[in-house]
Image (cartoon, rainbow, N blue to C red; front, side, top):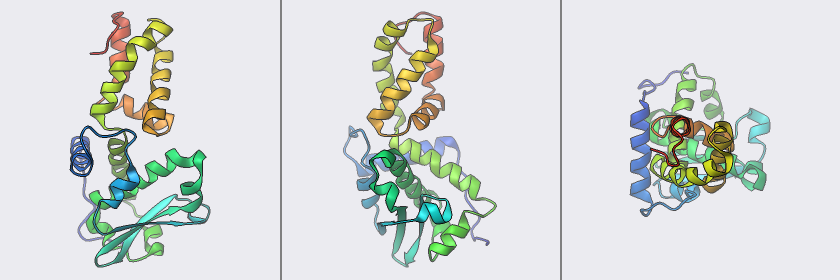
Length: 217
């Protein structure tokens, strides 16, 4: 399978700005947390969200997207994941990721006419880069850097008072656990987000605890 034009590339800075701009254009500021990802997707013109059972079992993926007709994209999420309370964090991230593909790779997705071709896309040599960018975009949508950093700064003083300055891992773990619940994402996703640019809260925690500070810079 080949595409014209080629798969676009993005810097982390571009992805962060694109996600922030989308949030500001579609949601009221200050943004309500957790981000209503279903509503956000519905605000994009020409997108239909649908649920089909067995997608993950048959193809090993939780969601996909293709161009249903010249005016509309169809996002399909595995029905069992959508319906399961246990999988709601995974569901939310999957929807955000498919939205990311439409925003980042629209000209590619326009060439995908059906489910079968959408599955084939996952085997494309450049899909790994597409997937990585869509995931980064999804993280920036569900965990906006400005809000995560603000919440982390509010949490830190209480956490360090309980855990003490010698237990950095406990402060990191509690921070990721508490914020993952607030933002309705997995602890793993939140931990990754807290560790990456532009937030880098874990670095700020390490520095503050070495200096025995009761606040984060």
